[in-house]
Image 1 (cartoon, rainbow, N blue to C red):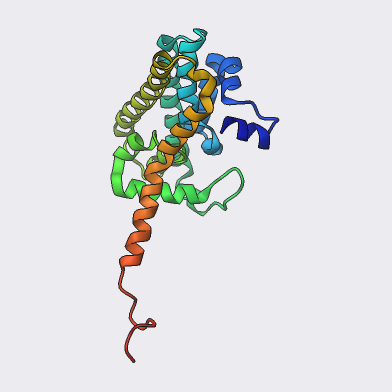
Image 2: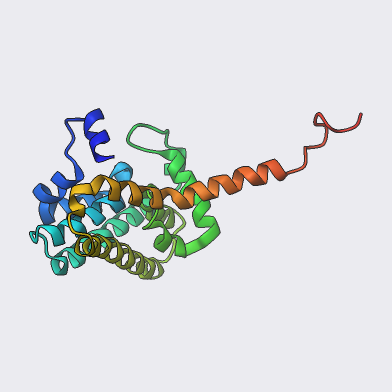
Length: 222
């Protein structure tokens, strides 16, 4: 997968290059941007964290004892920034036209998710691409009390950052040479990241098929 990305977009750095050359500062900026800035929805959060953990073991250039608290702080600050954007921008965001840098459809889908799961969305969203960018914004628009938001924020950021980095670290420790097969690791992480959304989509489609035809439809009597 990593080779596919570079074949299509050769000017973009690979995840390996981002981790190695970006270092602590580059990783902090990416995590903060994905969680705190609306334009960061396309950034590779899960796969980047796993890659960082893997190379922390393989190269020894990154220390998990520094990496985890640093990126935890980035996620917490990013989520808080998203919350503040939602609180200040209010409902105007829902009527803002969709563009290349602002995905209104992701915002609306996140709102549906928030309406269903409430504040716990902030925790669940950390493990879901796109949703983690917009969930804090939705919480701000909904005027969730900041103290309550902060609890979910800390819990979600801690579980996400720690689990992803340690997953990569222990994969590197358990499987020698796996850093040379990083594209397979990334593919697995991406698949697992989008699996909940795929299951939700399939469930929605099955429910639609099981619904009786509306009155006046082609199978109703006349």
